[in-house]
Image 1 (cartoon, rainbow, N blue to C red):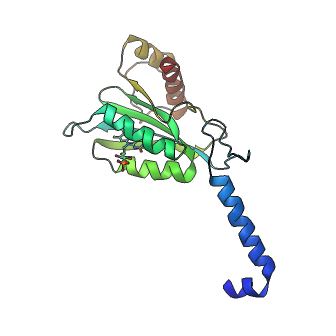
Image 2 (cartoon, helix red, strand yellow; image 1 turned 90 degrees about the vertical axis):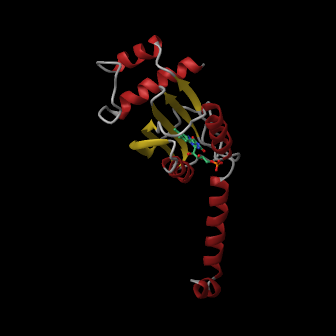
Image 3 (cartoon, rainbow, N blue to C red; image 1 turned 180 degrees about the vertical axis):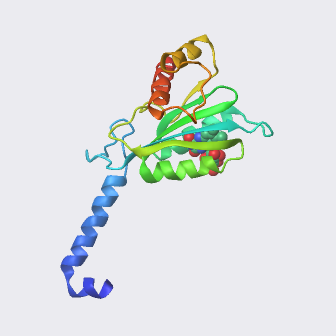
Length: 179
Ligand SMILES: Cc1cc2nc3c(=O)[nH]c(=O)nc-3n(C[C@H](O)[C@H](O)[C@H](O)COP(=O)(O)O)c2cc1C
């Protein structure tokens, strides 16, 4: 490769152009549009959805957790929503493929939750939850139960057994409550 580049300067030019474009595309992405400051769209916007249960043996301070989410997710232009009903978590992460992957691996290794089930992960054209570095919806009041009843036969839902589309519908309606 090095020999080829030295013999033919056009290879070097091609490689430098690729590096330059890659740097531009991956830098400073706007969390809403997914475009960088040059207006170039991020080609690999990804959405990941998982479900997990709180580890009852470990203490969990939600304000502390949310502070970590805001700090790390903002730095990586990752946005999303976390629903916590006191027992289980349902979280959506949206952002660059590498960034979402890196944050998810960290989350999956966190002993404060267990039985982590990956529900969905795919490239998407736009963010569903562009507003928050991580919006938190907590609790299961009557309003929340009614939102679940809009999409499911019962408000007691096992996220492992239902479609990710319906779960995303629920999360979008819950996010509307956050304003
Ligand atoms: C349910 C749950 C959701 C979490 N969500 C995020 C998240 O969105 N972003 C994040 O950086 N860390 C999240 N964490 C925390 C990570 O597991 C990990 O503790 C954190 O990323 C470590 O960051 P630090 O090295 O900056 O302290 C979450 C943890 C749990 C239990």
